[in-house]
Length: 283
Ligand code: ZN
Ligand code: FE
Ligand code: FE
Image 1 (cartoon, rainbow, N blue to C red):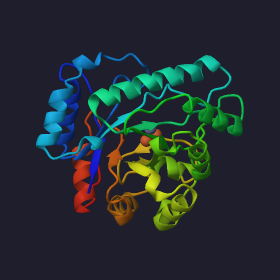
Image 2: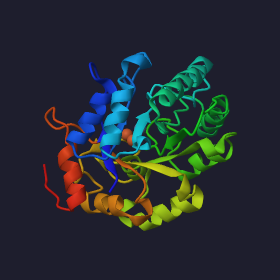
Image 3: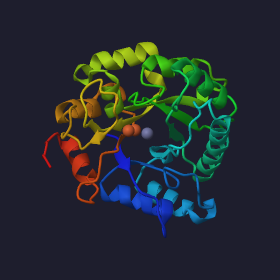
Image 4: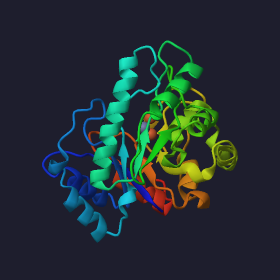
């Protein structure tokens, strides 16, 4: 099972510390923000301990493409009300891609964005326009995340993402990240996961799926909310999430936990162990 979680990147060891944190949970994949998720202030790449991090990944037989990067969520390429916000999204994204090239990471998870005060179609068309202004270098793949549909979020139906992907100039440089909490909150019933995955395959194509965010949800099916719960503690439940983690069609796709800390402690070591063993150990 390729499974990991969101890890921190902080002084003094930065990326090397991120890999150490993932290893401490017995993870064989990881996801991190290259700085604070809510802003775009970033350290110089020379400070990030890239060589040491790569060495540690290699020593533990974890391919570099399993070090997944999440774009800061202030990037909003769907905003056409304030063009400066969408333009900023393009420059921020370009900076993130440069850092990824230096790190040697492959997959960048990106929230498609929120249309704010316009409408869904305008938002989706704005995303297409803005992403087409970005040049994605090397073999990097930007994975648009399935969203819950909270507020004015775009990308909560597979059709939205399919439409965006079909209209990008660099189609081979884009894919999708499937977030179980968001998909549940958007109204797809994961108890019938086969049907949901077939639907994904029909609308988007399974070959475009590169990352799964494995989270339980604090809200009911279709609530359009986006609040992650610990594995087994939410409305999706342990058995359904375990079945998703074990699905043969997703065997090569890293599953990344973004579940909340419990009493200031990361829950990931325990949750990874539960998902591997199939033994649910309630909080
Ligand atoms: Zn995300
Ligand atoms: Fe997510
Ligand atoms: Fe979320």
